[in-house]
Structures are given as structure tokens and as C-alpha cells.
Image (cartoon, rainbow, N blue to C red; front, side, top):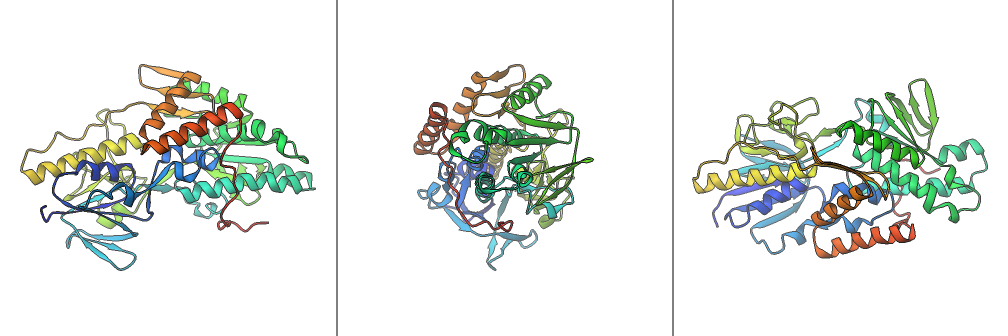
Length: 421
């Protein structure tokens, strides 16, 4: 093994793909992440909506590399990078030296200058976010069951999702199904079928990155489930009592933010140019400008396609970038010519609307309905890590399909983001 040190910050799709791509390269790898697990984010909303448990979509990073002695895994938070000294600083005070640095630090919620909304309108990026949202959704029904004030009861039974991208659409569909089909027989003082699920989008249509006909189908499918879709109306205020949408105020005790993201502070660490979302504007080989030994991938990087459009911030893109960066590093170590500039290969866009419909956009081929849902399910099961996870998720979905009962409706963890009433 050589003495070449590769430090990878971030154990998401891009970071893991890069570490996997360097297997057998003879380098020493240190993988740093703030959490001890790799998370399959595309199914995170299913944890938030009581379909799956946390262990079905997350895996300990140490376990993934237990048989790779050249890989050291550290649980820590990066606070800065000194590109001159080639060091990475951790909050614990530890300093890591590197020969090659890969930043795959992802993104977090963007509240467009209103960070004060976060406590009452959590986003969905981590397992902690998912369990917080799940807790709030379930507690809303429990509190409504005991509430004598009709106005407050209605507010408890009103769920507002801000942002109609894939996450917002998927959350709205599942919450509507939970309220209208799963829970009605379980409560005595309330009729959960009267629950309001409101999906708010500032733009002109839901799922704006999909073809218009698929977007229109998704909206009709949501409305069929009982979701109220409000388009062209940005949210101007979020509070513990509800949301202000233009001139209208909607009393709502459960709000979920799915309207935007902002990149990690990687550009600030490196002192390089960033786009409006804070992503590093990388070179064609995914290295940071002026720093050939630093690669930036995934949601942290701003990468342009040949048609001038940005590479989307989705898991397949991050995996492709991680694999490509590994090839560049291997080529440098072996003295071989570098690979051609990175080229993103779009493999299609997918989104579900409840547990029986989905849309898939493969470009020329566009699918919708239950056939798309089955393809969506098979694709996601395929990319899960390990046979146990694939079997467990498949069984959970089959159980819900046959029984209509969600398997993870447990209220756990202490509420920390808002005082319980």
C-alpha cells in the first residue's frame, strides 16, 4: 500500500461510490461523516410517513467497510479545510492531513432567508428529520382525538407541505392515504377522513422537472386522494399556528418544508466560487477551481450538462460523480492519462403518488399509474444495500398493499424542535 492519503468527507451516495471505486488502488482512505450510517434518502419520506422503519433504509458505515483494512471511518464534523497545508479540521480538535481530498458533504434545507421557520416547518434530509415528522403527524391525530375545541381540532387535522417537488408530492400522497384509508377505524371521537392535506407550490405546477403531461397526471392523482393542491402561491409566513399563503391563512399544526435546499459550506472552506445555492462551481474533472487535489461531488457541486442545464441533485448523479472521481484519482496514481471530462448520463426521473401510482420519465419513454409504481419499487429495492434490507422493504410494502396497515406507526423520541402542548 502506498502512502497516498485520501480523505473523503461525507458518507452519502457520492462518497461511498468513490470509496468503492478506489478498492484495490493501494491508497489509505479516511471517511468522515457526522453520522455513523449511510442513508438511502430516496425512501426517507416513507420513514416519515410510517411505512418503513429507520433500520430498513440506513446501514452502519463501519459495517460496510469492515473488510477493507485500508479504510478508516471517523464519526466527526468537519469545520474547515486548509488547502495550503492540505489539512481538514474536525470539531473535536482533530486534524487530518490529505494528499487528495473529496468533499461529498451534501445539502440541507433552504428557507430563503427565513431560517426562523425551521422549528415549526422541519425539512426532510436525515433520519432525525423523518422521525420528528412521523412523531408530529401521529401526535396530531392523538391530540385531535382529545380536543374539544372544533377550530383547534381542525387545525390539528390539517397538514401542510410546502414545495411540490418529488419529496413534497410523495409526502402529501402518503399522509392523505394514512388519514383517509388506514386510520378511520382506529379513532372514536374524530373522523380522520376529514383530514386536510394541503400541498403548496409557488410555481405553476407540481413536479416541475417532469414532462407536463406527467405533472398533470400527478396533480389529478393527488386530488383523487383528497390532497388540496395550491399552485402559484408562495408561503409568506410559517408559525406554530399555521401558514400564510398570499392573503389567506391556513390554521395548520403540522407543517413540512420541501421547498428547497442549500449546499454545505464547502465553497467557503475552500475559498472558491459558488452558485446561488452555495454549490462549488467545479472543473470538468470535478476538481475545485485552482485546487486539482480537491474534488467536490454530489449536492455540494455545481456541474453543468452539455445542454447548459445543471446536473440534478439526485442519487444517480452523485454516484456517477463519485465513480468518475475515483477513476481520475486512480489514473493520476498510476501515471495514466486522465479520463474524458465528466458526462452525466440521465437514467430517468421517478416519483410516487401514494401507494398505488407513480410517474416515470425516461425521456422518450414516459410511464404512469400502477405499472410505473411497480417499476419504481423494483428499482429502489435493487439499489438497497444487502439482501436483508431488500427483503424487509419488499415485505413492508407487500403487507401495506394487502392489509392497508402501515407497519411503523410508533411515536418515539422526545420532541425537541417544538414544545409539546
